[in-house]
Amino acid sequence: RPWEVLLMGKSGSGKTSMRSIIFANYIARDTRRLGATIDVEHSHVRFLGNLVLNLWDCGGQDTFMENYFTSQRDNIFRNVEVLIYVFDVESRELEKDMHYYQSCLEAILQNSPDAKIFCLVHKMDLVQEDQRDLIFKEREEDLRRLSRPLECSCFRTSIWDETLYKAWSSIVYQLIPNVQQLEMNLRNFAEIIEADEVLLFERATFLVISHYQCKEQRDAHRFEKISNIIKQFKLSCSKLAASFQSMEVRNSNFAAFIDIFTSNTYVMVVMSDPSIPSAATLINIRNARKHFEKLERVDGPKQCLLMR
Image (tube, rainbow, N blue to C red; front, side):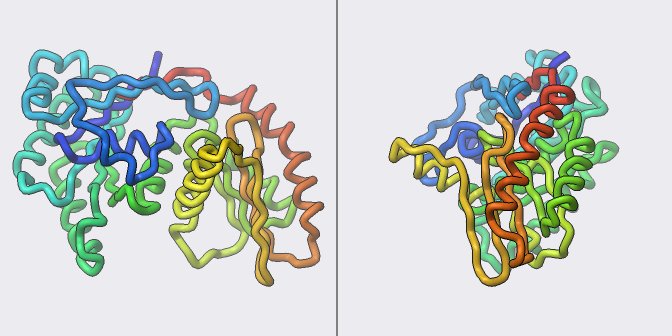
């Protein structure tokens, strides 16, 4: 049975923009030309090769929202595993936004009580930087209170920085059925090659799907920043009819290697031991490919995700 993921929020909240950046290779400034979603917009994408997502981006105009809760209620909310609800932090109709969210939760509770709930407080770039923590914390507390008896995970997001990748990486992480085995093997790989840190990215979206660190790192947001930077670089390469395959960044403190790993992933290896030559690390990456390819084939996700 397909997993069902519901993407909802009021019109203009930014659902289509974030979906286009993550899954359709848009850059942030190009999302300005996207129009409002009419009713439900369908798109099909592959994630991790065997994981097929049939995306249902639900238009958020009042007429459509009311229909979702009445005539389309059973069709929309039955067998939902994940609800992603997007809020515009600058909305002037907060009371109506919360009303729609509560209606959504009531329908979920009735039809899919075991669903995972994610709330994205979006367009945080429009809030003054010194106010962002306070405003997000207040909104998060309100949403968690309104969500009871269900539990929700909240993220602050913006299409203009790495926060979008942090939120979607966290969501996608929960949809990967063999993620614990993947992490165990990644840990073994990191320890064998004496890496400070190893990250695994999904090849198409460049979302972080697994990581292991042996040494403490200072920047807690480094994963999402790397996703954002490399995704933009990949898009720049494609505009020049070139394809991105690998990259090495080195200074006096560390060396970082980003390379194609399996048919569905990229890997990033961070080394701080200057005595280990680049060639040795690249050989280790190459030698690990077969093992992780086999892991993907044996334990890779076989089912289809239905994202609505």
